[in-house]
Image (cartoon, rainbow, N blue to C red):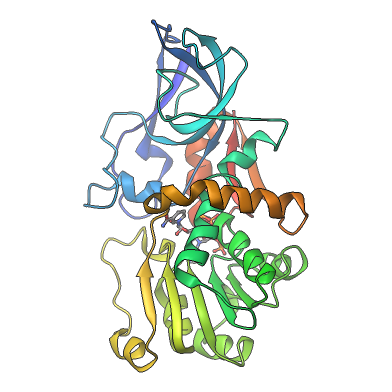
Length: 331
Ligand code: NAP
């Protein structure tokens, strides 16, 4: 049988395993021009939480009782399409199904001899592109500037910090445990790290970690952490609003300090970022990430859980800080 995960209920607050349902169906057959794909690695991502709600956003909500989709690496097991051969690996936005059929549109052929297959969901996939493009297109960091990254030990944040170091910045990361804070310095080369769970005064902690103030802030988290960073920004600071995971599960969005006067006083730029808007720059970004990886300037971590049945739990784990680097499920 072929397992599929559907959205059974829209989560209220933190997602629960009961919001998801497993259903069985037959393995599909390929018609003319179609291929059959067997899922190999499934990406779970915080942004999926937004698609599980029916609020207006930049991508359409998932429909109830329909399969959830995310980034997936899959193997072609049957091909009636001249562009694909049995044994090819592809990545694309696919459904949470063990087996599914496709006409090949939107799929990218990937080469397992160039990088491990899972890397195409992280460092060479959506999160790597987000780190590179968010930082370069909005942050525009210059050597000698101070870059602060929230969600720093995650898939996006860990890459942002390393790129900041490559570009010559002083880099300060914020993460949720002492172990993650230590990893930021030892594994990724950050200059300083803050554990927000043991920090009573984030404004003070940022001031101490950033004696010259904050020039670029790459925000994955929002909320009180961002309030503390904002209180330390420099003139002409650039704030990349990439994610806001600290409020994704709130039923009413909490109010923080008003940001307008801080932005005016510092002539600062605060801009929302969605990676899909920069698709034209994906090849350039991918080439740069690959070059730095091959040169050993960039490293990455993955938290890989095994088994199709583990997908909902891995997704929920993102909101509990269970991952170091990219959270992935191996099927
Ligand atoms: P990730 O950082 O690998 O995983 C999520 C991490 O968020 C967790 O490991 C946890 O780390 C932290 N977290 C969870 N709840 C938190 C809370 N209440 N307060 C502070 N931190 C919390 O995920 P990712 O894929 O790299 O994504 C990072 C952010 O970027 C997300 O907000 C995501 O939505 C966003 N994003 C945006 C785009 C875009 O195009 N705009 C693209 C990709 C990702 P700790 O242990 O440190 O708490």
